[in-house]
Length: 148
Image (cartoon, rainbow, N blue to C red; front, side, top):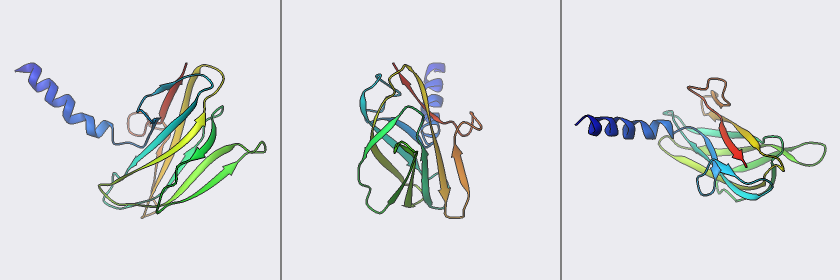
């Protein structure tokens, strides 16, 4: 009985824990290989009763974005550094309440092992922004990918 209650409690908490904006490999993993060209997915659920209107992704140092999958209904703006590398991506569009969007892109991983942190800023139709940047690790964690 106790094990059943614990399992129920854990399963009930899973959707809440997985609801944040996250970056994972296309297969849903939190790790990848040194120097590998990997397809990543940025999953962004709308967690409020109003629409998400903008998603900003800050590209970690050492990651080199090479391609994007088209995303109908969204416009994409890139910020690049002096070397021409993408440092930030902004998607503008609409993700309604109780919906999510998945933005796919390909990137070349760093040539050294370590952990890269993806920071995501989710803007809502009322102008509020949720910073998935680990500024509050309990409430707004960033996404980490281990490169090994």
